[in-house]
Image (cartoon, rainbow, N blue to C red; front, side, top):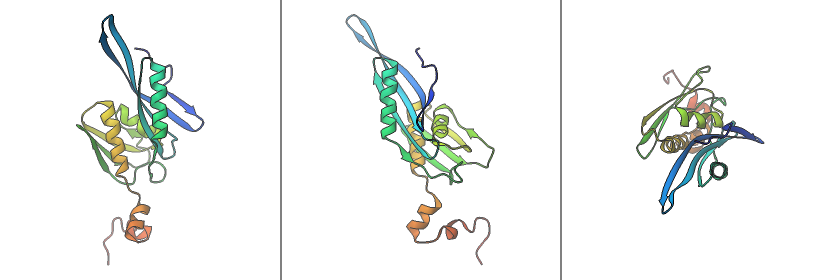
Length: 177
């Protein structure tokens, strides 16, 4: 199968990663007509990430379409200390379910292929993940984005409740008086 030399490059500040390429065949009168479907994840490694899929008769065109779609569909994710998630979260899409857990410094990205691409382009350095159910790259990426959508920072929770951030995260281990 045709693959580009490097599946990671920087466009100014954005980094894109090719997650998967799928060759599909359409049977016509003269034989088979091949097309390609690409799944790409794009991020700035500072908390913004997006994904896109593109289909075309040629691999580079499919990758270009997927990259353009990913750039249009970028979302911002709040990170704790710029390196990990604020709390554990689950996401699902179709038969795919993913569990994302915050991790202490030095853990690294412990994740399967499609999820690893999302976290590397997002800029997360420490996370532990588990994929349950479907191992289809499209479902895993969409479930990961569903989980990241459920992620809330202490600042947003404090704003919703009308409290200060210190009241939300101040008493981690101790009981109130």
